[in-house]
Length: 386
Ligand SMILES: Cc1cc2nc3c(=O)[nH]c(=O)nc-3n(C[C@H](O)[C@H](O)[C@H](O)COP(=O)(O)OP(=O)(O)OC[C@H]3O[C@@H](n4cnc5c(N)ncnc54)[C@H](O)[C@@H]3O)c2cc1C
Image 1 (cartoon, rainbow, N blue to C red):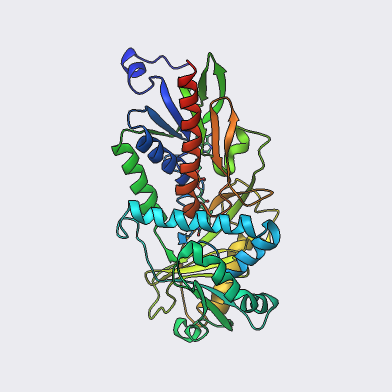
Image 2 (cartoon, protein in one colour; image 1 turned 90 degrees about the vertical axis):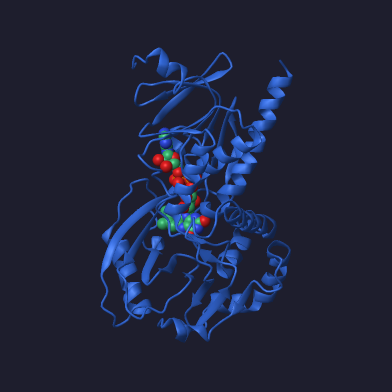
């Protein structure tokens, strides 16, 4: 065990009210909501990377709440009620992000979102059949009469090839995930939250009504409440939890002259997604080409998926254009037997806010609010029973 000085013990490593594990979107939004609820709380975030190292800084930065095929697939799998509950959480989450931060702070680009379809596929048939119904169902959530509209004419404007239909969602946009994480980090730190990086939580024990946390640095911390925001990595701390890690791979090109694609785009039930970042093309997905291999927490790219993404770019997005790929990366999402997040008590005074199912940009602000309400109600109950 590291021998801490009295000064260190009484400041940095003093007993905490709340320790949060993980500084991705879920951890940062939870910290923010906890301080807002009770500003005098001592809160520490423990992050094992030097920056958040999971999905939050490694995604595609879509500010989206569900494309038509995604929603129809979800309805088939989850039912209507849960599907629209998820949409509502995502829509409210996206609105909240823009209430806390200016568009400039988070690189928000309100260019709209699209779903692409090839030919008269079954997906396209179903979407056109159900589009009015979907719009009606979304009205109470978005407040708009029409969320989705057919925009086939724009295909030419974007200069994409091999797609025959387009559905537009003007409420969708893109943001800069790095800027959003940084803005959140700065905000919580300015509100007194202590953030330690490069420190991994190995396990925890209950001790006299408090939680003792063991870390890889052999520095232990004591806390009244522990919140796990470890998403795809939660199984290391809670082995039985219903989480399957899913890797998402991405690539980005250098700037392209006369680049026409503008907005965020989904294809093949969301298995492919691409957007412009200025005049560069960012594309991710193709996880469905190697489902089993991509169920991993290993953060690397693979030739199979990257080659498939490049093939897709050449065929549909930049045919005949010479382009250079400047960066490739991957991030790890958390899926499970169902798509709703897990927000619950997992042990006495231990909580989790995990399994964002590839939607955490949008979901995190609202589900963080839910876990904080749960933690607060238990804290107040405990104080009243003393
Ligand atoms: C390629 C890709 C594309 C995506 N596209 C979108 C999108 O368009 N829209 C959308 O809404 N969402 C998208 N997502 C999903 C979104 O990024 C995630 O849902 C969200 O970032 C999850 O946030 P989180 O805080 O729950 O998890 P994470 O960001 O993974 O954070 C968990 C943190 O916990 C830390 N940690 C884990 N274990 C420990 C430990 N024992 N001790 C200390 N620290 C630990 C990790 O280092 C990590 O920083 C995408 C994800 C990927 C990978």
